[in-house]
Amino acid sequence: MSDSIVPPPAATFRALHGTPVMFAGMVGVDAEWRPVGGTFADEAAAVFARLDAALGAAGLDRGRVVSARCYLTDFADFADFNAAWSAYFGPDAPPRTTVGAMLHPPFRLEVEVVAARPEPHG
Image 1 (cartoon, rainbow, N blue to C red):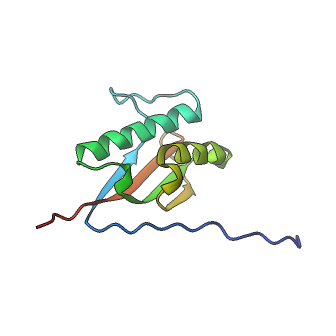
Image 2 (cartoon, rainbow, N blue to C red):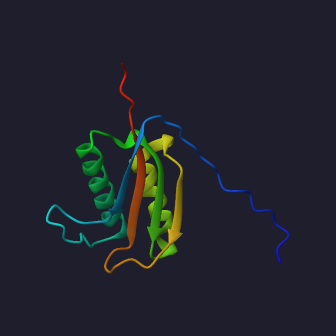
């Protein structure tokens, strides 16, 4: 047993008001729904491009994402995932939970998010 102290993980939160909209099954596929393959970074980029397209189709953008659950098949990819996450969301990233999971091959990453549709003014 180690005597070192492990700091708690950083906690983030985001509060946006509006109707929740859920997006699940964001995996790395191209426009024809074929797996992108390549490096983990390639796959993550495809996941986030697909998420952008889904958010856009709902009239939303990544700034409306209030939380995420992310699934990795191999935690050896965790640092690469953090880099992709930070590149996508920037410093104002929403809170997320990242868990290990068995995904349908060949996918190594799946992301689901909850976004908030703005409340109408009136």
